Image (cartoon, rainbow, N blue to C red; front, side, top):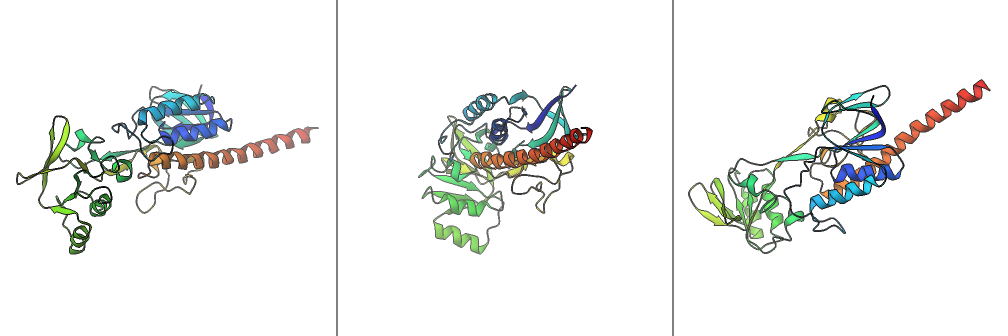
Amino acid sequence: MAAEYDVVVVGGGAAGLNAALVLGRARRRVAVVDGGAPRNAPAAHMRGFLSRDGMPPAALLAVGREEVAGYGVELLTGHVDAIVPGEPGFLVRLAGGALLRARRVLVATGARDELPGIPGLRERWGRDVLHCPYCHGYEMRDEPLGILGTHPGAVRHALLLRQWSHDVTFFAHTHDLTDEEREGLAGRGVRVAGGVVKRLVVEEDRLYGVELADGRVVPRRAVFVLPRTVPHDGPLTALGCERDDTGAVRTDATGRTSVPGVWAAGNVAHPRAQVVTAAGTSSAAAIALDHDLLREDVERAVERHRTVAGAA
């Protein structure tokens, strides 16, 4: 027999836990299902979150789990195999066969970062291969920095990085710079290294530089790269949630999808959202979701009232 909940939250990162916190405080019966593989696990510190600046990501999640458990939220370790519309609500099937019944579902499964196939990138990811200047730029201020031209937005990224360091090199790699881009980089004082990037050079477990195909090595303290961010939106796709013109799952301002009773929050809906943003949007989603439950609660209460009154 399936355990019954008002809401099953799929994903226990900052977004999922913050939604569970709001719903637990609203005295809803909530379960959080999480597989334990957060996107920001390689990072040593989390930045830009007021009162939590510099906190290790794992520590934030540990505190969050403790907080939500204090409000009666059930924390389940595992993976969701399927979410099936039921009568009423949804059946959430976990790997191993366990079933949860939910009146509403909030998907906060996050996203993954796909890096270019340059040797050394994956091994240094989150250490001295970075992507977000607002997350890591201050810690790398005034250091020799590089940006790899592996993404259409890489030039703008290089122009932005100039705010943190006077020594920034744009590695063109396979990016064919336009005259306007070259002028912008020159105007900002960003040097351009032509040629294909061969690999990152690491010495004594620290990034030393970027080696080009012609053998040149440009010393750098950190390298920034824009990954391809892919949402873990399989559960939403399986439910038939509509997508927008960019291919992302369509949600309204509160995270409501096109499928009644299904919400999405955090990086699964907004792949570029930072931790603080993911937590904030999930709070809005939880409040909207609670109001949707309230509407149904009132409808059921009125129906029961009418039944009792009619039998009197």
